[in-house]
Length: 116
Image (cartoon, rainbow, N blue to C red):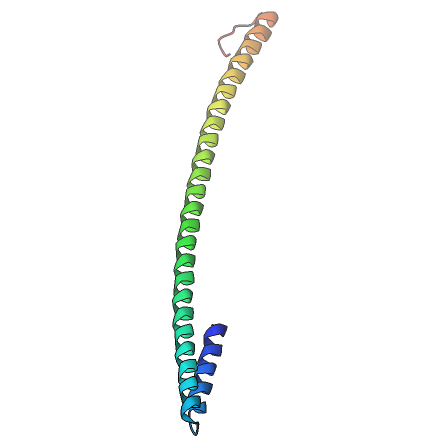
C-alpha cells in the first residue's frame, strides 16, 4: 500500500511538472510518468499475487487444522473406548474377586454361600 501511495505521488508530481516546461522536459516528464504508471501496474499485480498466495496458504492451514482436529478427535474417541473396555474388565474382575472372598468368608463361618 505504501508503494502504491509513493507511485501515485510521483505520478501526480510528474503531471504537475508538465505545465510550463520545454519540449525536452515534457518528453522526459512523460517518460517518467509512463515509468511511474508501469511501476504502479507492476506493484498492483504483485500485490494481487501476494494476496492470492496468502489466500491459498490460509486455506491450506485451515485444512491442516481441520485434519489435525479430526485426528485428535478420533484418537480421543479410541482412547475413551479403550478406557471403557479396561474399566469394564476391571469391574468384572473385581466382582469375581469379591464373590470369591464372600464365598471363602461364609465357608469359614459355616454359613450358606447363596448370598454371594
